[in-house]
Amino acid sequence: MTKAQTTAYEQQGLTLIQVMAILGLLGIILASATSAYLKHQNTFQVKEAFDQAQFAKEVVNQNFKANSSQISQTQNDWSTGYKEHFSDDLVWSVKIDPSSGTIIVKVLVDSTPSTILLIPLRQATPKSRDQSEIKKEEVLNPSPEDLLTWVCAAKGAEIPDLSMALGKWPEQMPKPEFSEQFRPSGCR
Image 1: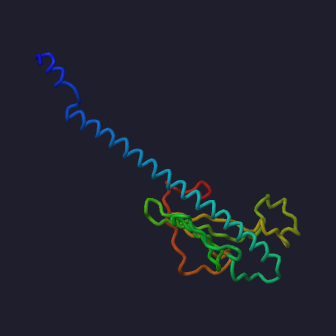
Image 2: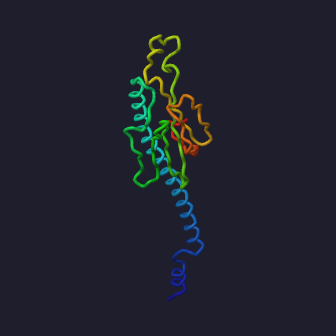
Image 3: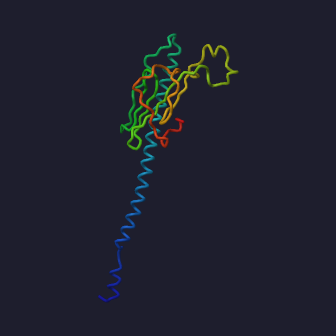
């Protein structure tokens, strides 16, 4: 072999420094992609749980409407017709507290248990129109849809005045703990 052939043969391939630089760049790309994927996955899980909570809200609304048409204003179980739901991978759960009608949404966000409470409260008067437009008979016989308001309690939120709650607030009710970053748009 001539010296020119040997030099050409020795210059093929990458140096150790070049390989390390490429691996470092790949590591940075993979780290950012993994972070973005996990954020997307958390957002999807929260959305899925909140969609199920909207269904649970409808159940409580229906129970409230059925109860308001009865003479007695007592309701023993606001969760009638609803069974606690879990995601397939047990990342979230949604249940209705039978005594207060509060919807408890639990989601694992970044491997941390997080809780949102959707609290139903009675309204004193219909809320859909200005007070001057409300007729006297509507105040005496208000529509059930106008009398139920939902409060979304997440991390740092104060529990509203429970004097207008649908029932007794249980002592074992979890505290709302939910990251602002993943809070659903319907919970502001």
